[in-house]
Length: 601
Ligand code: F6R
Image (cartoon, rainbow, N blue to C red):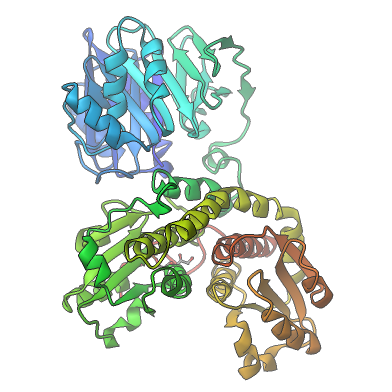
């Protein structure tokens, strides 16, 4: 998730671009850049690293530039963080900044290379710069309009040209807001960047374009017709605005899951072949001779691995084991194993130590991570990036479901490559997978009901979460979330294990969350709880006739394939933990004693 800004006005553009970019730093921070109009041309300043360092370098050069410019803060998805991959990208006498993913960039890149365009970066965004330049005669807005017609994927883009009187912006499935000032106008990915300058904001709608100059803003609708600006007045403070109006980053990130899932899927599904496009760094022979999959991770990422322990044997046909990284020291891997490390941050010390040990056994290694350029990425043979954008809340939410999505993609790819999964089954799995973002939206709409439940049980003092099959790891995850943000002792159990001990703890009123969307076997375990006076809160498939007869409280979740029910149940338990913590007045985004990235063993 990158941030883009643009400015056209009465003041010098550079300082305003840096200031607005810094206000978007929570969206991404691995590299930054600006392009400003300067002496009839365009000057670009960009580098990997923090915005403040780039700004210092810019000031050292005498802060060049005039009254119009664009800027970008990057969160890498294609290509590592580097000076070349930083935006803006230049083509001819224009520069662009882009947020989103161009899904057909490889085809476009080949076509543009054949036409003589030279690519200087590894990004998907650079194709947009050349494509716009290729279509640019005299009117920049026409060139942008033609270019975006051939682009597949998502974009928010701002284009600056040395010869155009206005900056052109366009968006599809990626946010862009326009700040309307007095003789100065602004563009940003998000409202917080604009608040010190103006509180009058117009939101660009999907497939619209805007022409921005110092004295004028023109919005063209998806048919190319000018429309009223329709500005709204923003009265949030800066802190609330960074959180997009949500009271906590965690809640914002919970709500970002449909989008994060869509981005993680974008451009990776091949519907006709029932397959997934992922470069696993292995040739077909290497894939066919794999003997097992070993997963290593910590905390929430470990729980994602546990879901794959159920999924991989079915989809890939390979035995799969999962180990917490800090206990990996006793594991001896044999060549023929594929080691998959899962780490949101890519910096967790326990995971890195385990990975280094595994590599001494001569196995192939792979990382699933959200951070391009993190330490783990340089230690493995191949990477699968979740495209969730930066996660600020300490408790992992959107990156967890992003990891599940990446594991589903990996399972389908390996299963297809090993001929364990037939094309028809691959197609069915992917078709249902594509529905997941919408199904998550449905779960998010259960907010009021889940909040009510959270309020009712917040003060009981303990919680149980039970599930079977792929929902057992989600029971563990629900309990972890409850512990870390609401400070409530919570236990996650395989539902069948209750009777082997923990049932002794169930007394009158003990809240027990039953994740009941995957098979009927859990019903007998729920009855065991009810018989001891436990209060059952069930997450059940909509229309299930049995569960309401057993549980006092039922939240219905949409029907889906069992494997994907893990994603829907995750969102539900995240919301339950969040509203419980809120009811108890806990410090949700920064729970006590915890850090987002744990870099010690
Ligand atoms: C819990 C949480 C932690 C992390 C764990 C591993 O909400 O976030 O349990 O999952 O510290 O971190 P990564 O995934 O960065 O290796």
